[in-house]
Amino acid sequence: MTRRLVVGAFSPSVVLRTGRRLGLLGCEVAEEPVPSSPAQFRSLLDGALDAALTSPDNVLAYRFVPGNPLGTTADVRIVSAVDRGLGLALYARPGVSSAADLKGELIGVDVPDSGFAFALYAVLDGLGLRPGDYGLATLGSTPRRLDALLTGRCAATMLNAGSDLRAEDAGAVRLAGVPRPYLGTVLCSVGSDPAVRALAGDLRETTRAILRREADDIVVEEAMAALSLPRAAAARYLDRLTDPDEGLVTDGHADAPSLATVLDLRRRYGTAPDGDLLTRGLLDGEDDDPGGERGR
Image (tube, rainbow, N blue to C red; front, side, top):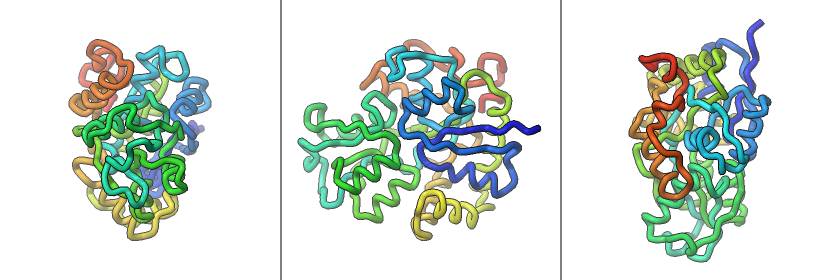
């Protein structure tokens, strides 16, 4: 029997759903929505999830940093890079005209010591706001932060993957994007799992079909259904997926410059491991496959 994989994700994966529609998935895959990165990795480490679609910074934290929110590390590996952020940017509530309006306000994060939070701090620094100029609210996943922004429970937050488009349609203000090059989402697993590797290959094949513009109608339909986007916004989401700077990673390769940006943000704003992570088993396949092809 074909193994059923459970994949934890913050936002529904349009790529995964498009692959299913195209008949490119070699096994049954169930998406499990997760409320936060600690909850996602608790389930991954406990075995409730077979894989996770997550920020590469979370893989760094739960592999190398014992002081992460769970207080434990594991053999977590990046199996494949998925996207370069899909529009990840700082969005403020309607009516905000500049970053100066955010002084003294609450800014929403997943958790304060996490990849999107580090990107947030860098963006705010670039806009002239320093720690102490604003407060932080721990709000969990991107869809939850979008809801908090639109209901007034925070003044600004980092959004992407369709939540940014919903925010724009509701009048939210895009203030600035993340530092680049950047890696937004990766597929990861605990240890080397052949079934997850196979899924990574299926997602890469799906990515190639999307980038060749062979699945436009399916992508738009899945974005409308999964992300609650109107058709016009779903078409913009398709543009996000195919954007060479912010969209899908063609070959699934977690390239060194993009990983360096993620690591540098952690070094600036959090607790970071030392050394060359690319030689320490971070990328699945790099430790037992000299060419690295299986980790791409």
